[in-house]
Picture (cartoon, rainbow, N blue to C red):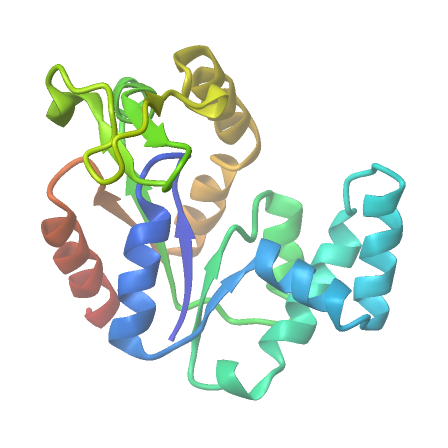
Length: 207
């Protein structure tokens, strides 16, 4: 089964994707990971991508698409895969249609105000990497694992989160309409309990 995960930053895509690929025994295809791998292995598209990165430019769509196409042609993708972080735009989705058939598109749906609360409430320990949420911290300001102070990352501040959500809605949300029109989009409420969300995703995938 070939699956795409959609959803805004903080919706829990990474966590749920990991559980799905383990349950279905298929690879999780992350564009960031395959880009780094292509560059490391110095594939033709990897070399091309590196030239843009070294020049401080964004890697253009056609290069990203070629890298995804190469990855999906590998043996471990023959029984299915989960695409994470691709496509990000409708032109990318249209290009994907020329070399892949997508069975299910799962959209994790979480309201913006809930996402801002979820992400801006995160606190991390720079020493050991442990992550907490203020809703469960009480008065604690230090890491319970190593005792170091907890901080709020710049990326997690409310104004930054709102900006990231704005970018998502303008660029990626049109994919929802694109896949809705194809009839393979399935919306899952991403605001509840992690296990309940996973159970709902698996129900959609097995339907």
